[in-house]
Length: 362
Image 1 (cartoon, one colour):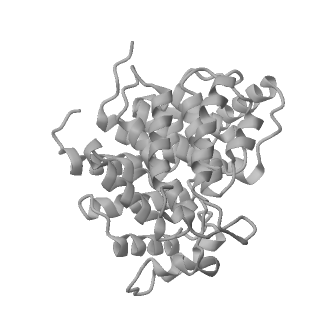
Image 2 (image 1 turned 90 degrees about the vertical axis):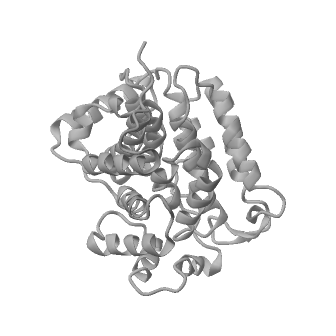
């Protein structure tokens, strides 16, 4: 039986798998996933991805990875501390340098504002959608570097995850998605694969999100809905409701269409982060139709099959799985074809060294 991966391996695996999911999922966000009505068609679909990996010279990353890199770079430059003005400046500079990475239209105005001198870097995001802010998954898709911290830093980590998201997503659903994704990565990072308890993992995430939804929290405030109307209904319950669906969906071994319908596969955070978490949990064991014995790679392939926002959901699922299984479970074929894996390793090592020192071997 294989030994548990080292913590450094898990740091590297988290960021590299996040890049891999982004690169592999991006083409299917553009062209869509074929109708997977049978396990036979599912098998054929994943065989096609395998062929693409072998035949392509390069798969480019999107804004998911570009912004994730900015967070990692800012954390390294600030010795593990969050610096809002530094991160905002890095976001703005990165967008200006390579604006064709697939940035969502709504966030572009915020990123352009970051290239100006701002007393309050959070203001541009707060002004969006008549002051209700964005609840897209942009905060969640890039939060992985924040999760790479010691277990003792858990509460501080939650606040940093929130702050990194607030720079572009001030709606409760937007920044809470980043909190949930960050916690999922962190718990996977510090879990023992040999004794992993799926129910306990879900329960811990639910506990975190219930705390976010406590009386007096922003969850009870008016939030913007998908049609830009407003509601006084608690928006925070969206995450708790979906987390409570994970166990029954796993027990049922629900088909892909049902998982996407129940958990979501959209660009909104509450309709994508739960699907990424489910992908990780479901793919710890074999999935009929996915002819891949590697659980980490199986996770990313499964996330892509959910269709919709394939690059972001696969990237988020990859970050969780990579933190759990370690970099050794990512094949050289994937490493070579996905743009940016080399930088991901360097950034993971730099963050690790800040927290644990270069000589630490855990």
